[in-house]
Amino acid sequence: MLLTRAFRLQSWPIKQHPGLHFLTPVRRNVVNIEKLELLKFDGVLAGTKQQVLYAKRKSVSGRFFYSFKDTGLESSEQKDYLNHRLRHNDFNNENYLGKKEKFGLIVFESDQDLSPKSAYLCYQDRWLLELMFKKYKSNEQLVDSRVQSDFSVWGSEFVNFLATVITAKMVKKADEKKLLDKFTYGELLDELEHIWRKTAAKGPVQSSDPYWVHPFKDGMQILEELGLSEPIATLDGEPKPKGRPKKKPVFVGPKRPRGRPKKTETD
Image 1 (cartoon, rainbow, N blue to C red):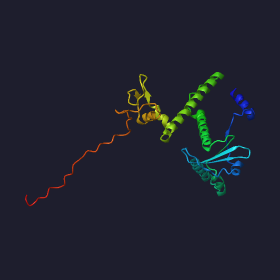
Image 2: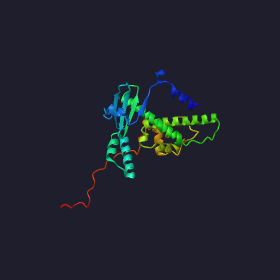
Image 3: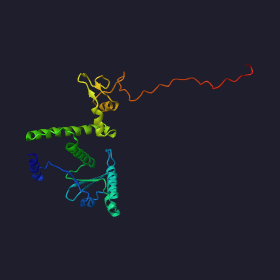
Image 4: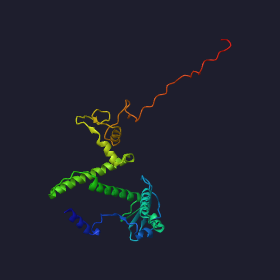
């Protein structure tokens, strides 16, 4: 039923639905990339973790084209290409130069006049969806329902979908708190998996209360950064600083000179 409904949606004319807009990826070999000079970039995109070059052009038909070049993706693709040529021993300089300028290139076509940053953020959300679908298909580690009726299959897929949505929100939250700069998502879950809270726990969740089971240091810090546990507070109400407290220097008088004191004529 869902597939039939999807095919019906695709068959509807877009002109009958003016509220629908699109931002679709474009292949790297389309003519418009050279025609609109999308490889001549306008600048570096601000507000992103990666170093991304961008360009924005408008075609004669009124469509807008956005091109981005991720320097990290460019390096990775170039490395993979050269490794592939090395394994097959078929390196060709002309082919390499033809592909080199398009390593790390991402091009989108849209009917909307967006800022380059807005278009790139839409791409990042789209990429997160792709990762979530991949995790939904293979890596979710969900129990096989082994059901046969239609309603059971729909129910199982609905639960799987909810699990994927929750996973996407967890990834975004961890990324906002910059935890993914320290851990992979798998390592993050592994740290949190070993922390348990007793059912007898009452009151606000604090890192100093006795209701935690196996409170590993990294795991508790992750909980605090995610806002799931209140840090240990000092007497003045400020959070306790991490690490050992610095020792206060103790004043020591002048050192006694080494050796026996010299005898004087009066001695």
